[in-house]
Image 1: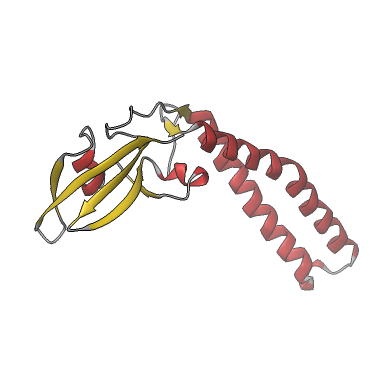
Image 2: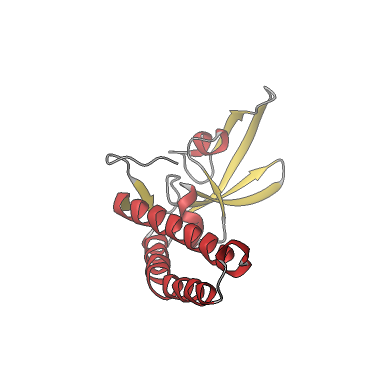
Length: 161
């Protein structure tokens, strides 16, 4: 996901805080631990055949990549204000009824997954687009990829905390 200077990433306060905490851990204790492992492996000698050194360097690359990703996302972050209970929008936890089967989803970007156990549904997805802006108790429909029209009932909608 490319994020430019004009991008905005909507996050709940909880998601923002968790990402910030992860960044602090990765920039501090995790980075220090990897540097220590590299130093120990270097002291063992021949680096070309040193599996511990290679593993530590791989871990370092992955950690630095994640630090960069988190830094960019946090810079682009905006704390979302979910709609009120009963209305569906970004930041809503919706309960949907599809032919008698109820499912609960959080409407929003995948970055919210750090702060929730709910399955995330993008507002641009067929289901997300169908329910956006609607209210508890309404029946909406969307076209499935196979061309069938599917009706769903919005059983409930509450703002994410």
